[in-house]
Amino acid sequence: MERGAAGLRQIVPEIELLASSPLRRAAETADIIAQAYGDLRVERIAELAPAAGIDRVITWLESQRARGTIAVVGHEPDLSQTVCALLAGTNGPFLELRKGAACLLEFPSAVGRGAATLDWFLGPSTSAASARTVTETARRLLRRPAAASAAAIGLARLGEARAACTRLANESDRDALHDFRVAVRRLRTVLRAFRRELKTVPKKLERQLRDLTRATSGGRDAEVQLAWLAQAGKPAGRGPRGSALASSRGATRRIATRGRTAHGSSQR
Image 1 (cartoon, rainbow, N blue to C red):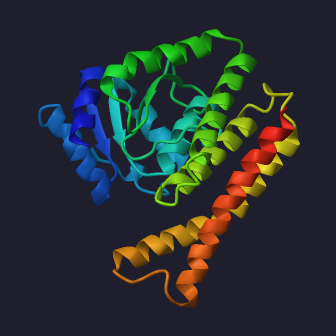
Image 2 (tube, rainbow, N blue to C red; image 1 turned 135 degrees about the vertical axis):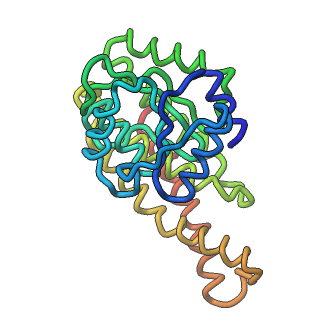
């Protein structure tokens, strides 16, 4: 997190206000950012607490417009939903702020739903050195027709799902199923958010993606429980419950792989 905060300062040299949720984890993250900016003061804001509500956050942001650049540290899924509401007026979210991710929004006029523009978005693994590339990509999308940009975003999400799907055969890759499910959900969100622009995408595909997410839910739950058993030092593979969990995980990975194969063949 310290490296991420230092990288953030390279991209955004000055912050007028550093605001954080009152909860400890968010406040600790804000303290790291504050140190990167030379012991910047952190203001704990009740509106940034979990489940405070998007409209409360937007109202608070509007009241702070005179303060220039504001850095906000909060919680998921609240932050992603707020960002999507500010960008497109939808609670999507079509953009996901995982731990360590950041984005920069600009408001040409008043702060409100659909009033923001996205300057850049950096994922947790994105280095500060690649920020210029990310920014240029966003600008290129904005210059293209809406349908073409929406299609490019959708294809990128599809590529993420396919990449994660190829990892499912590796039993030692504990994050493969999680990453696959996240990519599928993100693809579904893009299809819903840009339904008007992506008129040629059949609604059947959205239903298939929904069914695939539901079919893999039990297996992901089993993976989480197996990981907990392993951490607790208990042999997960012994006994009927451990065997059932392992069987559920393996079956779910096969379902996900078959879903990807069926989808791929239907597109030929």
